[in-house]
Image (cartoon, rainbow, N blue to C red):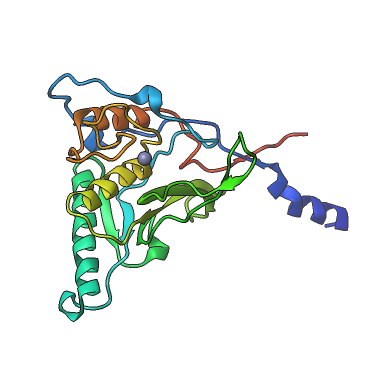
Length: 240
Ligand SMILES: [Zn+2]
């Protein structure tokens, strides 16, 4: 091999491009979902990302939830942490009926990790005054990142995503579960909000938070019927 050929061989990576958007098979749980009340959906509110819709294609989706290191009896703050955990686990269970989820004990292994921490305050510029301001503190936030996952089965890495959820450490009856349920809805693919307060993905907090609604699941199912670049291997471009 001449030096020039070697360089070319090493340079192959630059010929990899993002996978074309394609649909994945619909998860059985969503395929079997019957819409009992003839409810509609709010799919029109869901935004695709640069990689397409935020669809999981390998199940179960692995979920990590931060856990207390002390027993509940140790202190008042430990007890708060245990109550928080219980309520977050309820939300995980709620969604497990519609998409297979598995709890993992290591954050590194997780597709979705849920942390007991207040979402970071991010200064935003006020368009009118030109000054930076701190917005009202939120109690929860979900964010995603893309990465490339190498697998033994595929010759090229798979475009993948991971979600991080920050959930206020404060334990509030009904609200902690409701926030976790809402943010998990985002992490599972509902990247948008419902305009109706009877849906878990309603854009604002409500006094009596609803369970996951038929509209939430109809929307989730439509999301999973969409093509996405996620979950597919990068494409090698023979190109010129
Ligand atoms: Zn939201």
